[in-house]
Image (tube, rainbow over all chains, first blue to last red; front, side, top):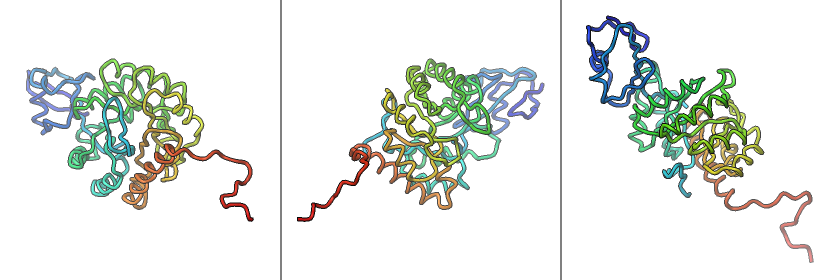
Length: 66
Length: 251
């Protein structure tokens, strides 16, 4: 199935968790935040959050600004 | 100088810095150190977008607290989600709430701003809203539970200084929370003016990061904020129409 990670179509296996997708992308454990379908998923819930075909995942971090 | 206190937290500097616009992290580091700041804004963007993740590590190394903003948000819903992501990523409940109406003026949308502020206060955030220089709106934001109000001097990045000093004075006079002059500062005298008007702190970025010599301008801003604070406390003389000799009369 395919999920959208920061706008990129990403193929993942059935039953893939959010943690799997983030690990495959090399997302660090600290300094980032993740939303699925517009809702924040706390770090502690990454492993228990399973994705569906078409899930929209956003991974954000702090950058220079303001 | 006495500490800036926001929602019970003490900050050893009354100059809050932004990190946007710096040519690179080395320039930014020298400017931040010269500014003496204890609190500095960052923006939230996609992990793989440009800008680099190095700014958080820099702030951590310098012992400067990060103040995430919601820059780029146009609706309360966008700002609330961005604030929640920032809280998760940075493990802080501080947020500089920005909800702008359009990208040409970057002026706050007062309706969306107040809505977002109410939602975030309810959700336990320490909300520092970037607001118009409108005493009525500032009061409503404070009443909603915001920990400070941050009126603009003029639009973001313009360097036009404080266009309506009387409004800033009215906001200060009515304020039950700290007032931070945010946006529009172009040079040191304007930062001093903000403090002389009674603001508790100044937030600026562009004036330093896009100056020809950011480190020197950061030093100037640090001194200006301290000078303005001292002058405010010292009590300026009343303005007089006619001259008033400062030397004794001739015998």
